[in-house]
Length: 597
Image 1 (cartoon, one colour):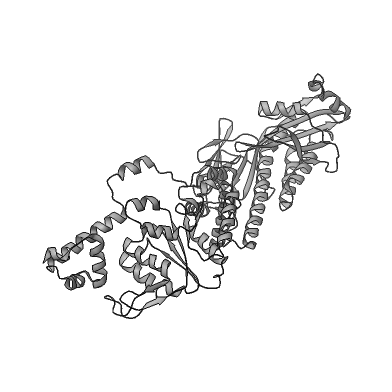
Image 2: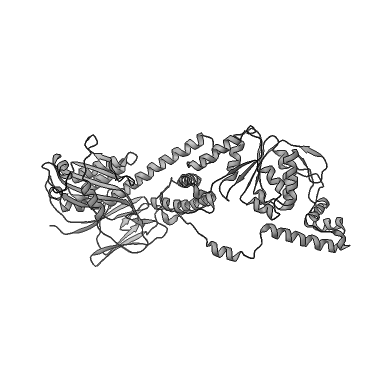
């Protein structure tokens, strides 16, 4: 038996580095013991040897390091078989002795493992599980190898991939798998271990199975199957050394299979995105049945000229839905004009919608065409309709009833031909009761209604949308395509998404920027969940923006009337607004100029 040694194996270059000395540094600096190519930092980590063990410590926070797929930040005691991932570089840590074995025993670990990893890396664009089975079977001299999965609903087990691949027999011992599952570790079974198990012994004896190795496969806390190996006939039975070697391979198997699963899922998602583009759904990314039902309804109402009211929480994509309806309508060749009624000051929104004549108010140096005229023959989308001032709601009602407008400061009636689609995240029925929304306007708009579901009710779409945003931001930044880890994916799925798709987009953009590798880990998924109880308690005495705006307007109009002794023309000049607009405001707020004369 030779002297025990410690080493790191670089799975990318195939280099084996002996860990000699008390401190081994890793980084891009020429002075580093283990040299990494740029753009790595000069010092990423170091290994400290103390009390007979190596301790791995990360020095650079900007560089993401995982050990056995788990992110590490503090000092970590290394054990044989640990897989260290630094960016795209993978190291395997092991301790071994100089041993001699015959040709039927377990082969030398380091040389065969190097060949195995290089073979897998060379074939990374193909089915990784096939090459994994070939490599493991060669390394452990198995007569058969397979990855066994289990249906969580029926508890039935089946083979995902086998070696030899043309073997028609799908043999495996349920008892061995049960043992590995219950023990949560690799188990070694010899023929005496199953001779008393009814049903098992006849099958295994019939196939002359002499020994079995079975190991549970996991990625993080998620089970992904079992590695099942056996030897038959006169082949030497598996030994404890074989079991130890199998244990060393499991972290690599877990990582490779999980990455393969992610690549497969990525391929499926990209195919789904391509199909969505082919279906011409107006940029709406989805796969959920609930969203499909909404789009089916949108397609049915699109050919109509009736007004459409789109309801839904903020960030659900109501404007995309409006654009989709327009694209499927008979007006698709004409303009689609959108305006956010809550984002434009009240004294400007009337001019934006209806246009104005020259001299209509201070600063109106030329005639302006409004949105309704600009969209002639097409569609006008009024987003955040619930924020529209009550004074403008009367004019909008005339558009819906008579299809005509009058520019601000003008007298000519202009006929228009547009379809109106409106959207809101407010409860309009409640606003009607509170006097913030006209009931007759609601009846005119509420002809065809579509409700866009929140993202929490579209769980099937979360990962699809996340992948779409990852691809978009990676392309925009000019970086390599990134994928979500299983833990990151699970965190996205379980979040309630109060900000819906817009919140998801922001979270993914930040994750793409912060991720230091091609895999987006759970640590870069920054989701802030506000304490709604604290927010509500703080907002008890805060008026709505609508109420605050009305109160401010009443106050300033009253002060101007006092200063002008009730002269309306002088008051309009003080406030720098059109006289007709001032009179309209005074009527809305019940302000009588005679009181100030």
